[in-house]
Image (cartoon, rainbow, N blue to C red):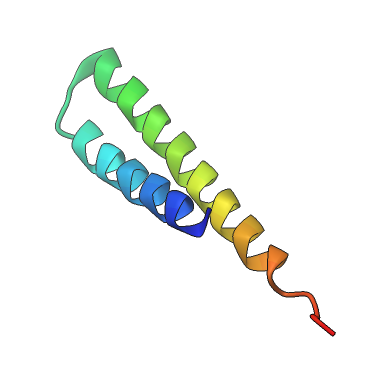
Length: 57
């Protein structure tokens, strides 16, 4: 799950970077999709981190 979050985060950052070179409404939608992917990636990474923080004894 942590790797999935990292992949979503990287794809989102790439999409945000690419969206600035695309003009018009298509660039805006790509930017929004990138922001959503970054947020999902961060959420997945935080959930994966908190799951393993409990004690095992």
